[in-house]
Image 1 (cartoon, rainbow, N blue to C red):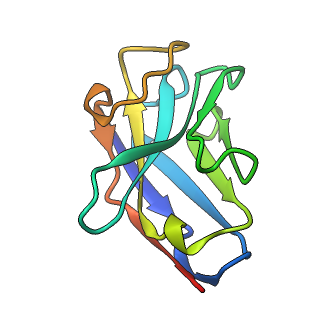
Image 2: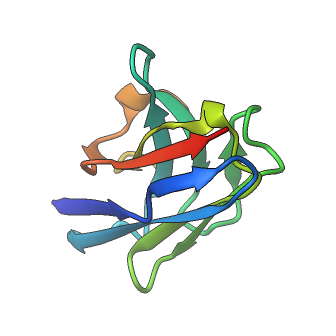
Amino acid sequence: QVQLVESGGGLVQAGGSLRLSCAASGRAFRNYVMGWFRQAPGKEREIVAAISWSGGSTYYADSVKGRFTISRDNAKNTVSLQMNSLKPEDTAVYYCAVDFQHTAVILTTPEKYDQWGQGTQVTVSS
C-alpha cells in the first residue's frame, strides 16, 4: 500500500520551466516502474514519461521528447519530472502513478498502473 502526492504545478509562461515531484508514503515504490500521466479537459489521460526501478530505462511521449526529463530517487521514494520549454498544449493535470507488476518493463497505458496521486495542475500561458 502506498500514497502518492504530486507537487510543483503552477502557472508559467510559454518557454518557461517547472519541476514536478511525487512523494510516496507507506509502501515503498523504489522497486517498481513509475510513470507520469496528464489529462486535459475533454481529452483522455495520456502517458508523459515513465522510468524503470533502476532508472536505466525511460520512456517519453513524442510530444515531450527533448523537453522533459524523468528521474527517481529510490532511497527517498520520490520521482521527478523536469519540464523545460513549456508550451500551451502542455496545460493539463499531471498525475504520478506506480506499476506494482513490473520493475523493468515499461507499459504505457494508464490501465496497467495500480496506484495514483491526486494530480497537480500545470497551466502554460501563451
